[in-house]
Each structure stands twice: as C-alpha cells, then as structure tokens.
Image (tube, rainbow, N blue to C red):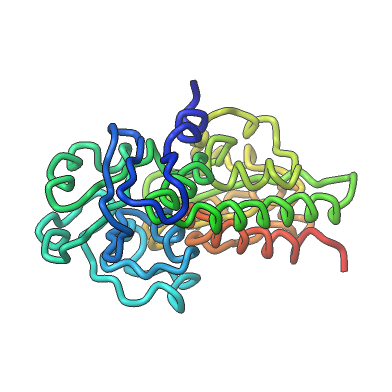
Length: 294
C-alpha cells in the first residue's frame, strides 16, 4: 500500500464535536480528551494546515531553508514561538509551551515521538509532500475541523480542474527545477508540486514522469531540464547553490523554455516548501498567470 493510501486510512470516526476522540496515525493511536487549544506544528505543511482551518499555533518549527513564518501565511498565523527547526527540534521549548496537541510526521521526527507524547497528545502523518491531502484531513480530524478541510480540498480540486480546462487541449510540458546547496533536482511525481501538476493535467518531460521525489543532475546536464516551461525554485540562499553555474552553461541558454522566455523563478516557500492547501492554491494562481492566454 502506498504512503498516500495508508494516510487516507488514518484519522478518527468521531462525530463533529465529539470528544474524547481517538486518532489512528503513523505511529499508532492517540486519544484527545478535549478540543485542542494550544497546538504545536513541526513542519510547514502542518502550519499551512492549521492556519487554513483558522487556528493560530503556539509553536512552529520552520525548515532550515526558511527563517520563520512563510510570507504567504504571515497575516493569519499569529505569533507562534520557535521550537527549533524541522530537523533540529528544541524539545524544551515545546514543553515550555504546554501544548495540548503536537502535529508532525514520522519522516521528520519519529525518534522524538515518545518524548513529544509525554508533553501532549501527538499525531504524526507518515511523511510530508505528495501525501499532503491525506495529511490535511488527518490534522483536521485532530482539530475537529474535518468538514472545513474537505470543503477546502474540494474547492482546490475544482480550481485545479478548471485551470487545466482553461489552458486548453494543447497543454505545454512543465519542468520543475530546484537548486539546493550541493544539489540540482528535477522534481518528479511523488512530491507536492507533482500532485498539483497532475491535478491540473499538465504534462511533464519523460525524465520527470517517475514515481519518485526527484532526479538529481549536475550543472553540466542542465539540458535535461528542457520543457515548454521551466519553473525554478531555490532552497535557502541562492549563492550557496549551483544555480549561477547551471544557468551560465550554454546548454541552459539553448533550452526551449529559455529561448521562448518561458523559464521563470517561482517562490520556493509555496511551490516546494508549502505542503498544504493554501500553498497549493497560490501555485494554481501562479500557473494561471503564466499559462492561461489573456
């Protein structure tokens, strides 16, 4: 069974407003005695999820490539305290916040689960990324906001299908390039952005039609990124990556998208780090602006 299918089977059969409720999740079952009021989130996906449901968390762990609340969530997220970073959690800071719910994932923090569970009921998805829709419903079940989450997902999916329809039958191929320190990735199907492109029906180059997160390439092989459109993200500081070297390569300048003026930088915080419905809708807005003829 895939991670997405396993995630879809998680959650609670509690009725709206019913507490105590038991949640099945990646690391077992967790009982919530009352509706949570002090929520700590351990990644950007969980932050997007709770904020989209009208909840301001008391604590948040940003990714290493970000230095706080992502810009697209700032106006609604409140002022959560930092509890370390995604890969370096500060357990003392989490305990000090006296949370009544902790939301995270097995992939990021499985080794901290037992300790976190001593502080508060802790609910973990399997992983962030391409399972984002199931993760959203799992988080919503813990927060007694399932109906709202289902409505937001349905609205997103309607928008994605409409975008595909508005682009028309001759859809351009779309290549996803991301620069990280020491790595250049061509993002494939098993990732957040991969699911969004699939939902809109946008085709990918053959080398990105794989059920994996990404394929890694060197600056010398940047021609493997070719497509009708190239959307580029940068994780953290661009100077710490090989973006300049790759784009100085004559092969880059000869790519179909580059010659057509259809190679664009996109916000990493929504396209690659967002991992939730608010980010997904922002990506749809960006795609519409570029791909739908005015």
